[in-house]
Image (cartoon, rainbow, N blue to C red; front, side, top):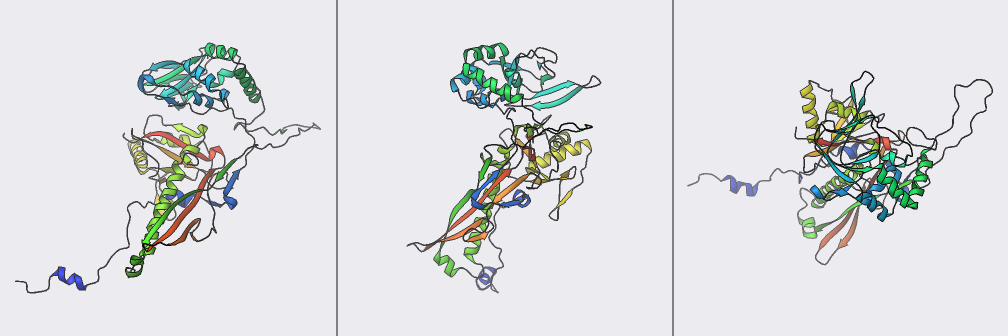
Length: 454
């Protein structure tokens, strides 16, 4: 026999203390907070640059698996001398002439001083590119990985040259090799390829600066009445244009809910709040991963660096930091930040934190390392770390949006009432417009194949 009112019964007459609706998927979204946002009128942003001569190579892709892996013929046009070549039959014939060669860790692929008589594609594994230092010690030039290659510029050269570096497998490697003789045989039978190579050689002879831009003639250090050079600055004839992307959804709220259950919390307001949070999360994911505009895909091949040994070491973080000036911040998956912390601890290094927007964060060389869980982790437990310079004034990375759109709820985000249907359901169209642009190639760098399992 109970002698007092039970707690369960008393709750029926009590007012509960409650939270607003919560969601686990809300992250700090550091990228959206740190990017300077540029107003884009007309929905399109054009990036004008100085004229550059496209001599650099991209990455070759492969198809198949195991013993069946082969170079993918169309991707051979990523090689500098073959850039722009669209003859699929010709590229297929070249792909068939590559010979597969496998190397164990420590085996030499190319040796300094030997004739440079072949092109080597790396299908799988890591290769250390080294040279002899001034005092006879080996010096690491670069670490190459899947899709990268050695000797592409030799295809268009008519000279006998020798390798100026060593290439050694640091992991089990699968490579594909094309001899200079085989390439010359294909060129002799293909007038179209011969003309293409002639155009490439002519472009390679044009004056250019270290970044590949058309040179501006300047005289310096002269005395007397020397005739000064005349020059002009040429521009890219077809600059890159960025259109604003969109993330959208239609929010449904029943009128019965909106009418009867709005005390003490406005149901429509909280439905809309959580929907906008999800849209902003999708926006940040697209800015990182979208194949057309995403930062992971927008980084230039010259700004991609492989880790030396797998985990993110201080040397690796220095390697991508050294490729640009005024780096504003790193962007890394929280697990990558933890992996970098382990490497620092192992060396007895304890970097000073930095303060960003009033909060202390991890840093390296004074550059903040900001977390972003939108950077993917692959099946083999690897990821990437980005570093960027930002702002139009510094020719960096900028976010793109358009404010002042109809029914704007937040900058470049609109909530448009769509009416009430015959089922008494209210509909709202929620749209967010955005994009991101890398103004010059060295504004963005990526450290690739960062291993998290060490």
